[in-house]
Image (cartoon, rainbow, N blue to C red; front, side, top):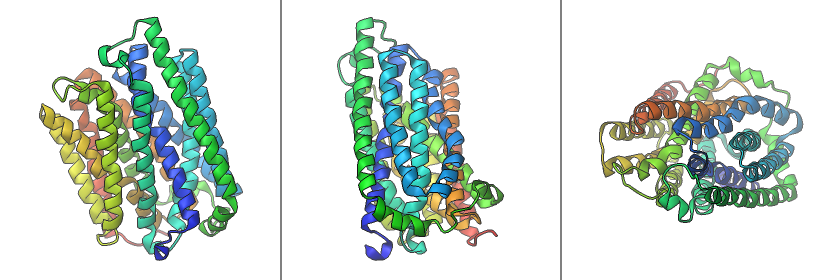
Length: 415
């Protein structure tokens, strides 16, 4: 694997991809728990994603600027510290039974995750030959998917396990049950804080090895984070990233409730969480492993366009039909989501005339789509139906397909 840039330092960086996948994925079971605890509608519950991904819009460019100034390794350490502090704040907010404070704590945690993405994505792409950057970034994102799968399992067991979620389908009016549910959230995020602290120590011990690669991956240390705004391809890539992330997050956020509906599969919340982890997010993991191999044989633009078209078609099935088929169609979208983020990311880096750090900052800023799209989905779900809301991710996937088609016809960087 040496010719593809798979080194010890690269393996150390992939652990970071696993970590933020694990932490972020706990939002899905958390949303279900908060709906029951505080009696929220879809729009209110999905505001957790609005706050979580709002951090991408506010933190990405400053994080890129700090990365340019101080380097990736210090940025990574500070980012991990921010994530751990955010987890502890969620724990504190849950102990106070305050939904508003939980949202604030999620923002702090998301700020750390955003900074970590800004530093780690271009670092992974640059750790080897340019022609294999798609392979490396998809390989690293496979660990992100693994983190998501394990994270959803962890969150489902920690926050949705137990009889209260099997028999109560709406608000938990019993104060004792609410206290038990909030205590489960406290425990889950306390464990995550300890795990992130241990990871920060590991990266600190690996700092010299990673720093050697980081210097090579950062040829323009004084580049302005605003440079990416001058590149049409960086802007187009940012739009594609935002729509894709929004679609993926929105579907994952409503999946447990969607599978719970009697006109879909009628699952308990706990079983729905397992299906979400094993099939939707597990499909993304399997797809990234398969996609990593396929990208060595098939042009990245062609594979991206195919996955986007199939995902849009599966969303259409959910919108137009009823019954168990719609549940399985929604779950299958995860398989075709798999290669989208890293492929859009690397295609944009190749075509942007700005530095990798500046372009990465803009692309991570665009992850704010993970806030906007779920909010729109929630509004449509509240006003019409949960099935009809899948029209929003369908449109997002069609836009990603257009990006792939355009990228296939323009190969050179902009000046």
